[in-house]
Image (cartoon, rainbow, N blue to C red; front, side):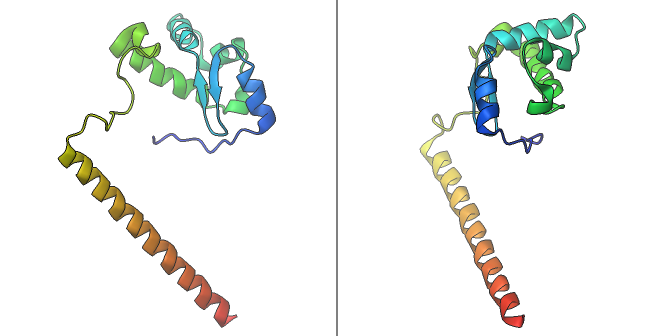
Length: 140
């Protein structure tokens, strides 16, 4: 996802977020919002309320979750709502990342080979970086 935030929630922040009835789950990097909140937020937004106003009114500290988060969420939720209706926001439709469970054996193999190639390239990069760091230490 191109808009990945760099926010890391502390233990205290996770507990505070988890206590909000509009939150299903919190990790150190993400918040899973309750489907009912998503629907309510989209409807309030359609009535003219701003994303930040909606989040604040539903118990979120915008400074904690990130100033851009309400706008990003509402943009994504409005699109899902437009394409799939309330059911899309309630998780009753396939709106997420395509599952690899339904790939043919040949496609699964191609995907695995691509992942192996990527991981091998990543390993080579780390090895080269280690070597360069060793050389730099020797020159000191």
